[in-house]
Length: 128
Image (cartoon, rainbow, N blue to C red; front, side, top):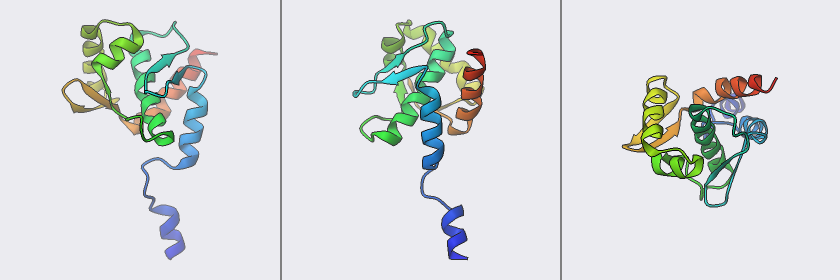
């Protein structure tokens, strides 16, 4: 019974295999600098997709380096994506309504981990 419990009840929200899988799948689309700046590789993505990608990237980067936070601010996104902050705020509102984003506080957001797989599938299908 104890062995089953160890397999089923885990401390982390995402298991290591899933983090590795997600990170490998996101690599063709973006990278993260050591200071947490998201570097988008595919500039043809729509603004909302770039924001989603940045949110997912920061979330995954935190598993690899705890110095990189899972949260990202509107200002950071604006600087990373070279998009006006008011446009970031408008897209964030849409992403909150669709449950893709979890608001941490005003102007600070985190991806909903339950949405990552679906987003990666959509992203990968765009490349085909």
